Structure formats: structure tokens, C-alpha cells
Length: 145
Image (cartoon, rainbow, N blue to C red; front, top):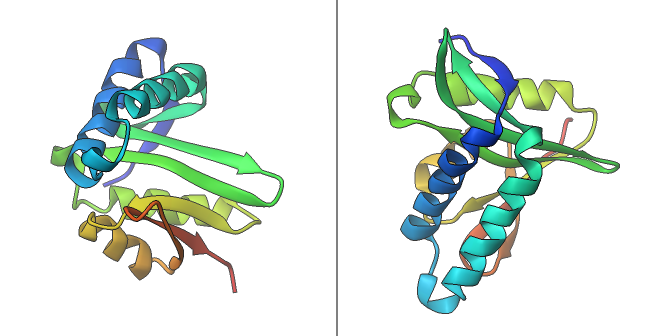
């Protein structure tokens, strides 16, 4: 399935926050963190950066959201969310491959260790685990060879 990207809008903040919160609730050890502080931090980051998010579009329908940040020494894939009805259709794979192709630098991301489907996808696309972050996430890197 083909996709296009379009700018996210301020009315997308709540949806992007909900998607983040769902992952935190599912995969984070919420007993080991200040849950409310984390949620405030996540919401604040989304509110400040919504103009950098992109809607992933399939035809005229929003399939999800992505945030890619360019840094002097790396490209950071900060968020990638696809709604369930758009998962397992090759959209995420194509999007990640396009991000890799567009970057002249290593691509980094954080993924919850327990999110086995995502970890397997990233590994299949050539990402390697470079560290464990806070005991619940992997920091992964794709380096062009």
C-alpha cells in the first residue's frame, strides 16, 4: 500500500498523545517511573513539536503519524504510529526504508523491548541494538554499509 506524508495539525495533538500513552501503558514499567510526570513531558513534547510531525496518509485517510528529526550527526526516528487497520500492509516498512534512503547519517530510534513486533521489524530492516535504555527500551541504530 502506498503512502504520502502531510503536515500534522494542532488538532492532531490529542491523537498523537493517545498513541504515545497507549504504548507507555502497554510496555513501560509504570511502577518504576513518575507516570504523571512522564505523561506531562510527553504531552509537552508533542505540543511543542506537532509542526514537525507528519501524517502518514493512504489515499485520503490518515494511517498514522511519524516524527523524524535531523541532527548534525544522526537522523532520529522519534515516533512512528500506524493505526491497527493500516498495520501489516507494508506501510511501516516502506516508510522506514524511505527514511533510511533519505538520510546520509546513521538512523537511531528507541523502541520498547517488549514491543516484539517492532523490534523484529527494525532488526529485519538492518537496525542493531546498541544499548538498553532505562531497562525498558532498546536504542537501535541503522548504519549504511
